[in-house]
Image (cartoon, rainbow, N blue to C red; front, side, top):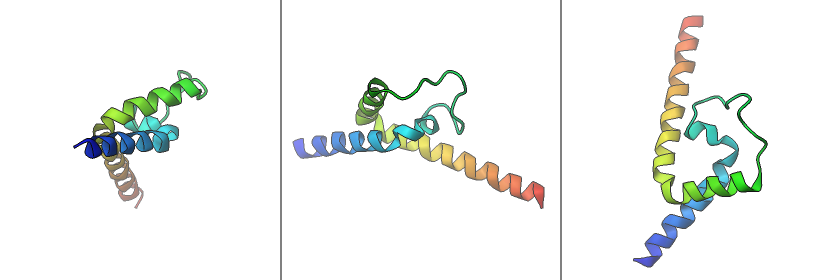
Length: 82
C-alpha cells in the first residue's frame, strides 16, 4: 500500500515540476493573466509542485478540459474563416 501512495505523490511532484511554465492552463484559462503575474520564483514553483503533488488528478482533468475548449475554439475559427 505504501508503494502506491509513494507513486501517487511522486507522479504529482513530477507533474507539478513539468507543468509549472504553463500553470495558467490549469486554473485561469488559455491565456496567462496580464499584469497580475509576477516573475517566477522558487517559492511559487515550490507552491505549485506542492499543490500538484496532492491534486494532480484534478489538475490533469482541468488541463484536459482547457485543451478541449481550445481545440473547439480553433475548429470553430477555422470553420468561420472557410
